[in-house]
Length: 201
Image (cartoon, rainbow, N blue to C red):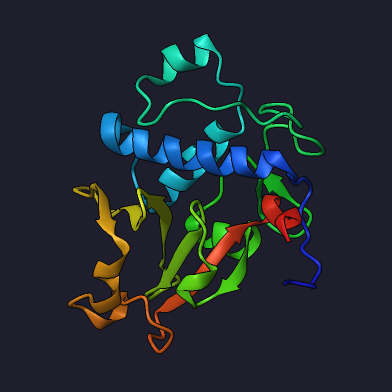
């Protein structure tokens, strides 16, 4: 249980938390499967999946977005992009009081998520995994739970980067130690959850 204050302009609660998680992961999987050309780096996958999960997914949205990996579920009922309480289309925090339509992976980490630990038992589908390398280089992966098995989906970055969907356990003993999901790896920052889900606790 978490008892600290999480500053954020808007949040979901109740059934909408489940709906967001399902849409967020479904959209990320659908981009990986059908639309990989949409993504330019690891943060881009998170930003696009987050924004699209908050929209109404009507026939026009489905036609514009394209194929979905999983069947649709009900939309978030509290509010929908672009009409987000307090911020409108500026859904990403740049500080504790400033919001923007876009933020880097570093600012996703600093102002849009909160730490939930480094133990696998804390993870839920739709949570994020962060790494730090050098020169303020942050890397983010999306955790997915599919058919009883944990996966991560992420973009490798760079001009020739690509989207990958890999079982989580592969990163427990990754060949390069700096990418291992282990508490004693100083490059592994831990597991994080979107601040708009703060009412989940």
